[in-house]
Length: 534
Image 1 (cartoon, rainbow, N blue to C red):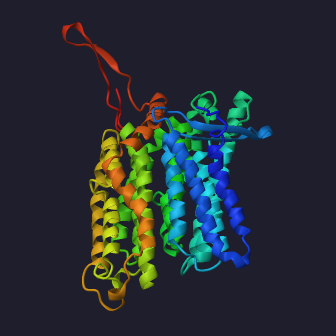
Image 2 (cartoon, one colour):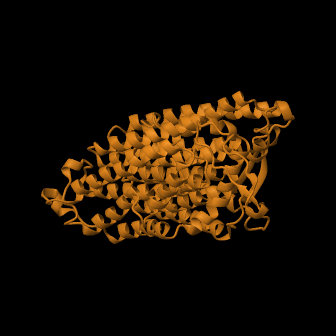
Image 3 (tube, rainbow, N blue to C red):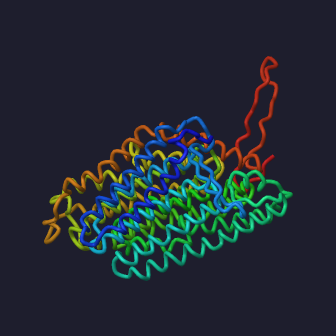
């Protein structure tokens, strides 16, 4: 759906341009007016959020296709265009991005070189918005790469301890994956152009021909899917490509950790759904057992490793690997409930884990340590901090009534029919999450408060204001997720139907004669991955 009114036509472009221009404005603030930097950055980010709210308010829930599309030729000789659009799958990731960035800016203080810090944050917001909105493969690749640079500098310049090592490791891992994806994009465009005579990077046009065996043989599609999948697997990250994430989180400043966990990791899970599966549905189905296995290993392995961490921030980092494994499970189960749960869980994870990193940052500002053994009894001097941590922690565990439960429940229910044994093993991750998070809470907040722990200040009004919208959404999505699911499901249904159409994912319905000669249509249940159908 292309919206043609004068205001709505460029609204998605504004979601990218406003923070990008804002980054330039922040960089141009005179050195003697450093007090203007943060207010200007927050104002720009709030303006971006206002445009995102306009998109949400005018989004038509029942439509499965792209809305607010805007397409303009960019490099016409190569078939590259500025093509952006939003559907139910990307809508709430855009909203999550618009929410998290101003919160991160208000909640954290870099301590030095504020101009560069907030300029990089705004550039990072522009890159994330562009990646979630791009419908041109080259445009997506540009934004997918742009986000690496701000995060590299945020970790390397404002991080802690061994920050240069962590920033370099993050950059090299993700650059390696991105290089493979670029090879896959160029190869795909070349093969399509050779057969059709048209050079295009447009996702919609490419998806019309990638399922044609005369254009892409099954073996070629498998290799191309692998090139995309490795890039997205590194970004998620999926076991065993996850080792950069705990280091990056541990050494990153609080604002960097919040954005990395809440927004940037979703570029990987979103990329699987939007590009890898959409372009190569048959290959995605064939590769599903591998990705399901790696996702489930990540759930269990990361949960066990999280339980033995001594650093509170590193514990939360490993919890991200486990939670993202659930999203991979739901995605490659290829059921409506599973994929819808995965999309919703991307948002839920962003809210709960982003909030956890903010809270860990608040504890670090007060105690200047993240070592669990040096903390204890904090609920006595800081009861509000303990209460907020409890709610967010229970959300991350998946307590009914909070947002984490809805996403995980949909994933497990949706995955059980097509990925039964993977789902059974993954369920242990829910129990393990309760183990490491409740144990961490007990050691940090309960017990006697001694020494410096007894003097810890409680949350102030600014910190409460920062956490309030996250807590409100954690409760709202846990109690009433219907508005979100109503907008997510049409786009998910279309994706699942595409996989079913171009793979042996399901069998057609069979009509049999029922009682009194009535015709009854029986839907065959989808076969489990790796199970013979027929």
